[in-house]
Image (tube, rainbow, N blue to C red; front, side, top):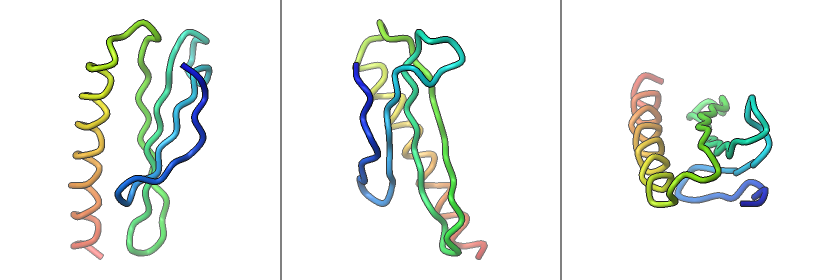
Length: 78
């Protein structure tokens, strides 16, 4: 897989970088979002390049849903 610059989807921005991991043999997905005050948050997850794409997609959905819940909690607390 190749590098994918930031793209916005549903209130989140995400990016994929194949060489950003601690070892060069990793795909790193980064998910960004801002709270109501404008503070930036980021979650990253590393995968092996030979990992099944369905597994990666499922994990990324789980991370996005967790981030959505956290974003709502931050909005309520503000």
